[in-house]
Image 1 (cartoon, rainbow, N blue to C red):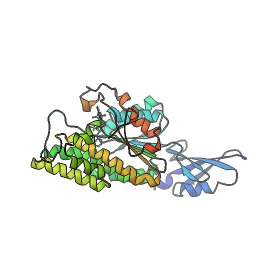
Image 2: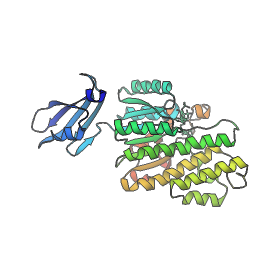
Image 3: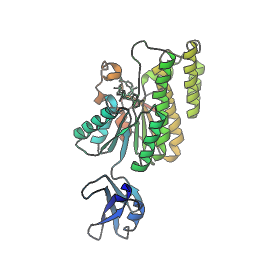
Image 4: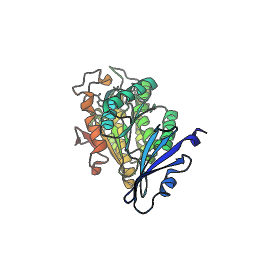
Length: 334
Ligand SMILES: NC(=O)c1ccc[n+]([C@@H]2O[C@H](COP(=O)([O-])OP(=O)(O)OC[C@H]3O[C@@H](n4cnc5c(N)ncnc54)[C@H](OP(=O)(O)O)[C@@H]3O)[C@@H](O)[C@H]2O)c1
């Protein structure tokens, strides 16, 4: 089996002894392999998997208390273009192993190559991920569990917005299925891989703030939402109201995008609360009005500038800001 043909090479670094190398078959759990070498004075074990001499598949390092990735891993959704591409590029430049995901294989693979070239690194991996397709989310989750183990940073950037005056039940459902339900599905599939100190950044929008709701009752229900199911119920009510034409009477705005982003931001707050005991931070943010395909390139910020706040949240934001909404690196009243 290919699995058995994969060897793990270890370089053992000790305080008192010179470095030496060891080889194991991949089927032996890395922790056990490392522990056999973790004697007194051993400070660090660097390991890499290879299928042939010189071919490095993955590098990890282990400290005396177990495995840790030598590079932090960041997963970015919808990263084949626009703000997502820039987020991936800036995270790769900051020294992270970036898993650039996209729903189109060719565009994603090409973007990953460009990111790697631009950041001068080989630690960029492309993986197919359509966030609105549960089978794709599950397949990605399985791969991440096996091959990444840890996702230190998850940036949920993928999103859609219909252009012009398009408004209808089907379009509202598609928008919600991507921006809110898709983001939720990715978070729920991957959050178990986010370690203590890890971060989840959801790229939402100022177009999806509470103030877009005219009904005080609806506003209160969004403010009081305590579970992902509460948010899902609100999103379903909106979709029903669009379908039967009663949305205005019920106090919903005529913005499919705005309500989907409001659901996404509300879910971020709920998820932050849920993950607090595990020491995982969750942030919602708006990148600003950015010149990308989504804005028909009319935004006043470049994609590079639009990526600034999401990247800052992923790397530097204070942990006590978890659950809050950010814009231009500042907390934004929601
Ligand atoms: N641009 C702005 O002014 C602005 C303002 C506020 C918030 N935002 C938010 O910023 C984020 C990025 O937007 P952008 O301006 O960079 O837009 P963009 O250029 O249109 O990029 C959107 C990205 O999301 C991907 N995507 C859409 N549906 C997907 C799905 N089901 N699965 C996986 N990927 C999917 C797109 O892939 P394809 O290429 O395959 O379509 C593309 O890579 C979005 O969440 C957006 O709502 C943007």
